[in-house]
Length: 540
Figure (tube, one colour):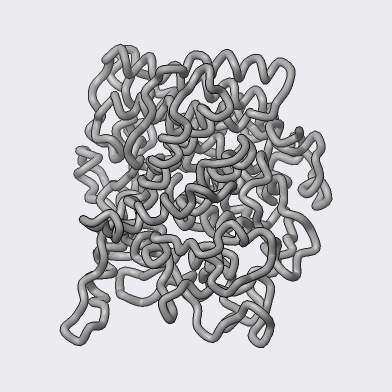
């Protein structure tokens, strides 16, 4: 498996030092771009792993999941027929293969921390945090690809062709890593990491994040049977009464607009370069018609059944998520070209709630947006690893499905929506009758599949629908996994689709070249059917 080598840690360090002052994480008299690997300690590697993993999560993985979940579309007004492979979809060993390659490289940094020789336990907390972060990204990888190298992976030159482990075993090993990390953090052993760019050394928050991540793992297994179901239930019982994260899990090594390398990678990919030039994906990545109809409350009266629950309910987050055209979100119907239905003359792109967060750019005396201020705020925005909204929706689902272990499903559901409004920076009004959140919660209250009413299936659909909206442009891959597992939210295919949504991706070309003796041979047909190659939790 030639893409996982010890040298990837050095390469990632070089990338980090291009964006962060080198004396912040290193105090050695050497060129920081030519560091000997044996001098790189967990204190340097921790922010490297976190930052490099988030970079890939925020860029092409975000684009893939946003398109497959019909939140965004390709701008056919400018690009003719964009995202053809996404729309059909044509899944091959080159389809988003950089997601595998780069997330594995980033995860190698966490493994380097975990296996670092530390007889005095100086880096015990670093190792615990690395285990939690490794589990976060290993779950994304195995949810995308199923079985993969794990037990023999990340050994560098000692093993370039690691065997493939079963997804079930990877899940168990990752959950064990989370448990070990929590025990280590609770013990208080080790130095507080000065390079913790997530919680700044707050171990209680790391423990709560670990519990929440473990809950995500276990809920992903909600449909499994047999031994794995027994294991799931046993682990869920241990989480009953645990503390879960109640804030957004953010990382920031010092993002700024000083140069392209120092920007938040999402901004550099989707919004602006540090110079103020639009990023490459700004023009091609726009709102989908599907998302526009949902946020606009089906103002155009689309008769398709999927949109009836949204009738008359304008989402108060809409203007913070996408720019408005004539007071509404305007999107493109996936697969259609100018002159065909669902391709308006003007379209919406990500708005400030996604590109900046709770803030907005300044305006000039002319009323125009201050581009310099916009670039500065978008560039310095923290990267989101997990939102508080997702944590609340996970707890809502846990209480819905396992009421003997978890409680207050309805409260967590409402809190998830509230957290989403807050994340996107929706203004809060002093009068309830004018407050967008209050209005929205009241409007959805009687809508099965959108608000907390109806059967348990209706409520599950509501959780997945609201989570999908909340994670748009942020962590949309989690909604893709939810859809694969539950079938919610109901999401239309592109008009040119010749296949259903994929259940997984195909291993990248790098594996078929560098680890040919171990990598399973996956066909395009295998991607769209339930079989032994489907992630284990999605086979039922």
